[in-house]
Image (cartoon, rainbow, N blue to C red; front, side, top):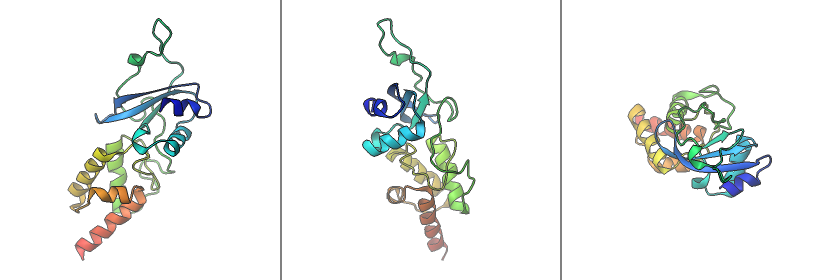
Length: 180
């Protein structure tokens, strides 16, 4: 992962650690000196399996080093307190919050994704897995959707419809079928 990051344009140094998001869920955090978080996410998404793509990208001015001159990994924060506390944007969508979202299901999914993924902004074209989602977070997402909408949403639906807009449309279909 670090080698892939340092091959990206503009990245001078990089380190990837296992940490926690604001909700306490384990995630990969990429610290980088130089480069753009959106471009880095895209580059890693193209070259690495989904589970190896970091959930958060944190730009740093310089890395702490040990007395011998090596990267001091213990100096890197392992917990992201808030999505805006030093992390760069986690979305590729044009919306901020729930701007541009249509329908009850899209608004609910955006709100749940914001909570589950710790993302500051969710757009209708955002992909759950490209924002750092994984199987455990998919289960958490399905559970919250079931609790809020009383709809039986299987976990495999998140994999079949990873874009917010598509998952919301699927949920709307399930709601219509239930209410019919």
